[in-house]
Image (tube, rainbow, N blue to C red):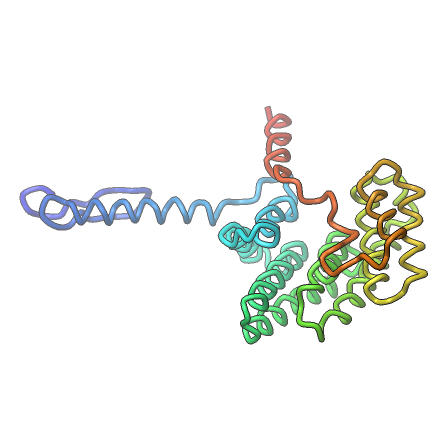
Length: 270
C-alpha cells in the first residue's frame, strides 16, 4: 500500500493487488494465492522421462486403498488426468484411472452410498474395458484390470462378486499365457502374483482342484518365499480361508518405488 492506493505485486506471472488499510487483508489474500500456486504446481507436475505411468501413480492410488489416504489417492488421480489431457487414450493411464475409480466406488459402498458406488463402479469398469479393448495383450493392462477385480471383489456388493472373480480369472489366465514361457525365470513377486491370484480366484469360484494345482506349484517352485508359506497354509487348512485372506498382493506394495526410480534416473543423468 503506497499513499492509500493498491500496488501490483508480480508473483509468478500473476498480478496480485494488496488491498485494505495496512495491507493485512491483502497479505492474507497473497498467502492464499501462494498456496494455490504451490498446490497447482504439485498437481501439474510432469511425469519424468523414464518413469512409467504405473510407477508414477501406483503408490498414490494404493495409499487410498491400503491406508485410507484419500488425499494422496486424489493426487494420483490428478496425475492421471494430466497425462490423459496431454495424451488422450493413453492405455496405461486409462487402466490406472479405472482402477482408482473402482477403489473410490468401494469406499462409497462401505460408507453406505450405493448410488455413488454404482456410478463410480460403472465409470471405472468402462475405463478398464476401454484399456483392455485397446491393448488386450498388454501386461500392464491385464495385470491392473485383473487385480482390480480379484483384489476388490470381496468388497463389492454380494451380487457383483462372482462376476468380478470370473472376469479377474479370465484376465489373469491371459496374463499367464503372455508370460508362460518365461514365468519360472521371473523374480518371486512377479511369478507369485500371477500364480497366487489364479489360485485365489479358483478357490473363490469353488474350483478346488484347479486352486490346489496352482497352490502346489507355488509350494514346489517358490521355496523360501511368502507365497510358499501362504500356499502351504491354504493347502493344509482350506476351511480357515476367509474373505479377508488372500493369495495375492503379498509383496507388491512396499513404499518408495517412485523415489528409488527417480534416484536411479538422477544418477544416470549425471
